[in-house]
Figure 1 (cartoon, rainbow, N blue to C red):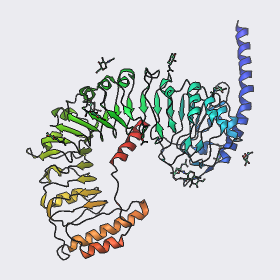
Figure 2 (figure 1 turned 45 degrees about the vertical axis):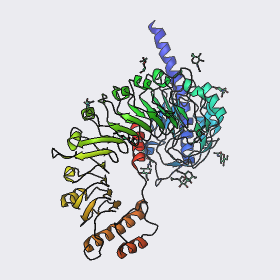
Figure 3 (figure 1 turned 90 degrees about the vertical axis):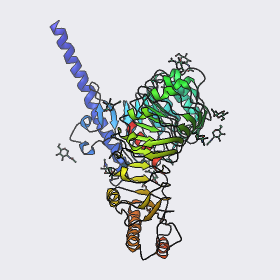
Figure 4 (figure 1 turned 90 degrees about the horizontal axis):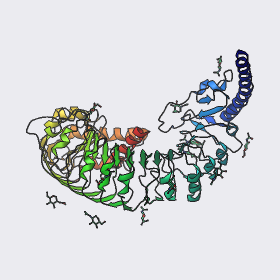
Length: 556
Ligand SMILES: *[C@@H]1O[C@H](CO)[C@@H](O)[C@H](O)[C@H]1NC(C)=O
Ligand SMILES: *[C@@H]1O[C@H](CO)[C@@H](O)[C@H](O)[C@H]1NC(C)=O
Ligand SMILES: *[C@@H]1O[C@H](CO)[C@@H](O)[C@H](O)[C@H]1NC(C)=O
Ligand SMILES: *[C@@H]1O[C@H](CO)[C@@H](O)[C@H](O)[C@H]1NC(C)=O
Ligand SMILES: *[C@@H]1O[C@H](CO)[C@@H](O)[C@H](O)[C@H]1NC(C)=O
Ligand SMILES: *[C@@H]1O[C@H](CO)[C@@H](O)[C@H](O)[C@H]1NC(C)=O
Ligand SMILES: *[C@@H]1O[C@H](CO)[C@@H](O)[C@H](O)[C@H]1NC(C)=O
Ligand SMILES: *[C@@H]1O[C@H](CO)[C@@H](O)[C@H](O)[C@H]1NC(C)=O
Ligand SMILES: *[C@@H]1O[C@H](CO)[C@@H](O)[C@H](O)[C@H]1NC(C)=O
Ligand SMILES: *[C@@H]1O[C@H](CO)[C@@H](O)[C@H](O)[C@H]1NC(C)=O
Ligand SMILES: *[C@@H]1O[C@H](CO)[C@@H](O)[C@H](O)[C@H]1NC(C)=O
Ligand SMILES: *[C@@H]1O[C@H](CO)[C@@H](O)[C@H](O)[C@H]1NC(C)=O
């Protein structure tokens, strides 16, 4: 018995050593050859990279390649099974004869966040028959995705998308269909497509993540039957896919595991189905930028796991029901036709960091103390409703505020902003603020404020402006005197601000000092405008993009 065991051990060791030494040598050579076909551009304008990059300094021939950073070998066979060269500033191309393709046992290959200079993805990628994870996103590949990709029948995750709009990787609908037929193990799919989404994508039985977002040329239909992926699907992002239909009821019945649903700008219309209230695991629910109408189903505001909801830029109407989802962190209902009083239950959402109700038809008096519970509030928008902001209890808004839009809220004084020293965007236009802006306000705003809109008020003088980070300031339609003498200090400050903005614009690519006065055009102002000719531009509302980016980061 003992003898038999010993023999077996000897035999195994022999096997292992004879298999493992040889591949290492070949693999080392292949890896080094591959590395040498690419160059490292240390000045590469690296895109936002979500994880630390592997250290190339460990790629040292005096060490076994299996110990190199980013390389993983199989314990028993010694074959390289994982190669991670993401975020490595690599530039160059991967031709069909690349030694990369000699690493035929790869199960995971990650080349994302590099710069393969618009080259094509070689059909040879289809020969990695053991591959489970292929990540080529954000690496500047372009052109047709080879149909051979559909040979990778063991793939669990395939990421081919890019955050650049000019990115140009295409898969024909035909190839996509065969890909879906063969890749039945897919759990995560993230790519760009043209044409029409084949319905079969919704029936991949193991799918957990489907991200076809930002496909401007993609049309889609929701399946009429039960989705085969419905039990497994956790994250569904189809934003900007053109569905041009109603949101199907079935969405809420079947997708019971869903944690994140993003259907923004999908050309959806009609009511929000009540069945969405069945998505009890949902944390992120984004339906902005559609033509959804009717009321918000009350159950949606009671979803037990909901963290972030965005229904902005739709045609939703009616009053808001009580919020019972106390897990909520972010609420965006901007630009709808919602009306009535703000429900008091909002005050229970103690973890709220962002609340935007601007451009609706909400009404009534809202006291500043309404927001006292929100110790982490960062964004607040109430602009353009029929709301009158009062401050009967003489309290202040939380210190954590960065973004505040209170246009047309009947604001009369600024005392409630005394604690807010981190404001970056402040819109108090179309209010009833009189006299001069107090010194404490300027000093609060001095170091962080970027955009200030106090137009359409009754300010009579402005004697300083916060210079350090200001990008836009709008003081139109006040009672300001624009005579050159009485405003000379202000004028010289403004000139400094303007030229500084221009100067920094050269460095950072954004040059915005945008300023307007109420009456006429003082000569000095006209002069500055000429100096800055073409350099002054209006910044688009960054909010949407900021939120998107934020979300991207959180999801990846
Ligand atoms: C890539 O380039 C960036 C910016 O030049 C640099 O900060 C980073 O360290 C580089 N990464 C590698 C892996 O060389
Ligand atoms: C990508 O590589 C190409 C050519 O190798 C180079 O011209 C281009 O500037 C690089 N792009 C970036 C963002 O570094
Ligand atoms: C490779 O490793 C050896 C020993 O670990 C070290 O002496 C040598 O400097 C390394 N070479 C490089 C290029 O890092
Ligand atoms: C690979 O093929 C390209 C042309 O397709 C050629 O330029 C290159 O020299 C070849 N590289 C090797 C290592 O054979
Ligand atoms: C992609 O590659 C092309 C061609 O080399 C280059 O001009 C471009 O700058 C690259 N883009 C990025 C984002 O690296
Ligand atoms: C499916 O994959 C196998 C190899 O795994 C390949 O031979 C076959 O052509 C693939 N089918 C399609 C439709 O691509
Ligand atoms: C869903 O799965 C079942 C059982 O696996 C299968 O018979 C059916 O064809 C699938 N439906 C679709 C539309 O793929
Ligand atoms: C979306 O699809 C509909 C119907 O297919 C079409 O009429 C409409 O023009 C499309 N919208 C966009 C923005 O492509
Ligand atoms: C889903 O919601 C609808 C309408 O709110 C309800 O009638 C139905 O019973 C719910 N189904 C499940 C499975 O919870
Ligand atoms: C929603 O819009 C459709 C037209 O797209 C209209 O027929 C319907 O009456 C609207 N519903 C409500 C509640 O406004
Ligand atoms: C608020 O956040 C804290 C910390 O993350 C958590 O413990 C608490 O349960 C949250 N409150 C609610 C009402 O969800
Ligand atoms: C706004 O709400 C009021 C009732 O509070 C209503 O009379 C009015 O028609 C609504 N306006 C719009 C544009 O919906």
